[in-house]
Length: 463
Image 1 (cartoon, one colour):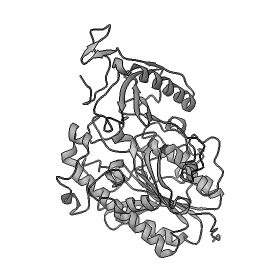
Image 2 (image 1 turned 135 degrees about the vertical axis):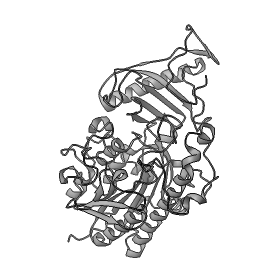
Image 3 (image 1 turned 45 degrees about the vertical axis):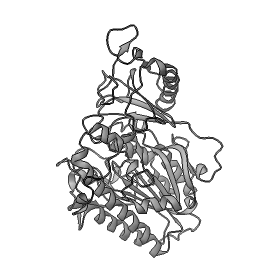
Image 4 (image 1 turned 90 degrees about the horizontal axis):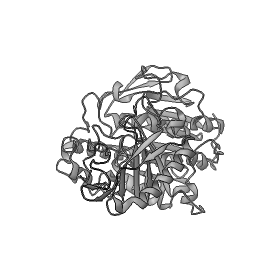
């Protein structure tokens, strides 16, 4: 057993699936779902504007494991495995002498492997208890994971609790080493085969007729059917988060353990397309993020825009490990330490499967383009995009009024168009064309055309 270095913190990523930022008290939710998250955010660091660069499971996970955008990992959509020769954060922690473990949902192995993951496809993690597609190999009260030998392990209890128990047992075995643990839950993702959000017994009932976010109030979708169960799942996740923090304290390693709570993407409850994510909207891309322990204690509220592509270099930076130049994100530790001289003014988003799109998120604006004639499953990029969405996030934070094409907003659209093209060139190394729509001079009237411009299906279309 290697000797722990007290100068290097242990690191735990507490990773949820499909959790909106506004499920937390810090994100404005009034229901008290997340007292442990909120307390960690207040005592540690709260990242108010954490944005996913790819609002779907597998692609975002590839970003989290590599520090590269999904088009650059090759995992631009689900059902594409992470290349075995891809450099990962686990490998960097291994080289630095950390013990590395992964528990939960992986979603980066071969499509035909729902459960066990071959050793060469585990991203370099030394210790393993996971399933490739946890949503297909388990249920709310039937948690099945696979160990390092590929053997099925049935864990008792509600799935969140079962995985949390496993994580605490694991931490107890490695607490004398420096360790890096990636704990990846399925919740509050829906259970695929039932299209439901199975909360623990009694939890869904507690949130029926509860507060509904303004976008879901306005647009409906599957909100009335699913939101109460979803809230119940969020509540249990927060209780699990508290249990992990309590375990660290009882083991005497809480001061030297950094814990990051975040999610891969959000959930729009079938209001923006026919499913739950894969859109440019805040409900899909804005995720919760709180960090506690180590250098993040007393870090306060970070208002700058942070992308999940910035998390891998930050994890390495926390541990004093050199950040590879190939990583496309940047450590945001200087933001917390108030030593950053400058920081990005926008974040770049890639969208696949439901549409082939690209988006730019600034503090004030959301600007998004789509390739309507492309196959978003077979194509990772397009030569030509069309402007599709423009939202003023200061006056319309829940994105209920699409401003794209309005003559009054052409100057800002032109500026954002150039900024997005620059980001595409920087990240993907290509130079596509973005076509603006015909200009709307006033409500329902177009300049120089008798037809409406292209708008993707969107209930917020001002027509």
